[in-house]
Length: 79
Image: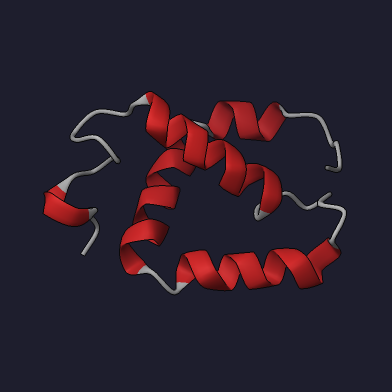
Protein backbone atom coordinates (compact mmCIF):
# COMPACT_ATOMS: atom_id res chain seq x y z
CA UNK A 1 0.00 0.00 0.00
CA UNK A 2 2.18 2.79 -1.33
CA UNK A 3 -0.62 5.27 -1.90
CA UNK A 4 -2.43 7.59 0.45
CA UNK A 5 -6.20 7.29 0.87
CA UNK A 6 -8.01 7.06 -2.43
CA UNK A 7 -4.88 5.79 -4.19
CA UNK A 8 -3.26 9.24 -4.27
CA UNK A 9 0.53 9.48 -4.50
CA UNK A 10 0.53 12.90 -2.82
CA UNK A 11 -1.83 14.63 -0.40
CA UNK A 12 -3.96 16.36 -3.03
CA UNK A 13 -3.74 13.82 -5.82
CA UNK A 14 -1.31 12.48 -8.41
CA UNK A 15 0.89 15.59 -8.42
CA UNK A 16 2.95 17.17 -5.67
CA UNK A 17 1.35 20.23 -4.07
CA UNK A 18 2.04 22.90 -1.47
CA UNK A 19 0.43 20.62 1.13
CA UNK A 20 3.11 18.00 0.48
CA UNK A 21 5.88 20.57 0.82
CA UNK A 22 4.37 21.90 4.06
CA UNK A 23 4.22 18.47 5.73
CA UNK A 24 7.61 17.43 4.30
CA UNK A 25 9.17 20.56 5.77
CA UNK A 26 7.90 19.67 9.22
CA UNK A 27 8.94 16.03 8.97
CA UNK A 28 12.39 16.77 7.54
CA UNK A 29 13.08 19.49 10.12
CA UNK A 30 11.73 17.85 13.26
CA UNK A 31 12.13 14.12 12.61
CA UNK A 32 14.75 13.44 9.94
CA UNK A 33 17.12 16.20 11.01
CA UNK A 34 20.27 14.75 12.61
CA UNK A 35 20.89 18.14 14.26
CA UNK A 36 17.52 18.36 15.98
CA UNK A 37 17.98 19.84 19.44
CA UNK A 38 16.07 16.99 21.12
CA UNK A 39 18.67 14.51 19.89
CA UNK A 40 18.16 10.97 18.74
CA UNK A 41 15.73 10.20 21.56
CA UNK A 42 13.34 12.77 20.09
CA UNK A 43 13.92 11.93 16.43
CA UNK A 44 13.76 8.18 17.09
CA UNK A 45 10.20 8.47 18.38
CA UNK A 46 9.19 10.59 15.39
CA UNK A 47 10.69 8.07 12.97
CA UNK A 48 8.83 5.27 14.72
CA UNK A 49 5.56 7.13 14.22
CA UNK A 50 6.18 7.86 10.52
CA UNK A 51 7.49 4.39 9.78
CA UNK A 52 4.62 2.66 11.61
CA UNK A 53 2.22 3.99 8.95
CA UNK A 54 2.93 2.28 5.59
CA UNK A 55 1.12 4.99 3.62
CA UNK A 56 2.77 7.90 5.40
CA UNK A 57 6.18 6.26 5.21
CA UNK A 58 5.80 5.54 1.48
CA UNK A 59 4.73 9.16 0.96
CA UNK A 60 7.79 10.37 2.91
CA UNK A 61 10.09 8.23 0.75
CA UNK A 62 8.53 9.78 -2.38
CA UNK A 63 9.00 13.28 -0.97
CA UNK A 64 12.54 12.50 0.14
CA UNK A 65 13.31 11.48 -3.43
CA UNK A 66 11.73 14.68 -4.78
CA UNK A 67 13.73 16.79 -2.30
CA UNK A 68 16.97 14.78 -2.42
CA UNK A 69 19.03 17.55 -4.03
CA UNK A 70 17.97 20.09 -1.39
CA UNK A 71 18.26 17.65 1.53
CA UNK A 72 21.81 16.69 0.53
CA UNK A 73 22.89 20.35 0.48
CA UNK A 74 20.93 21.90 3.33
CA UNK A 75 23.05 23.48 6.04
CA UNK A 76 23.52 21.76 9.38
CA UNK A 77 21.28 23.85 11.57
CA UNK A 78 19.61 22.71 14.77
CA UNK A 79 16.09 23.86 15.52
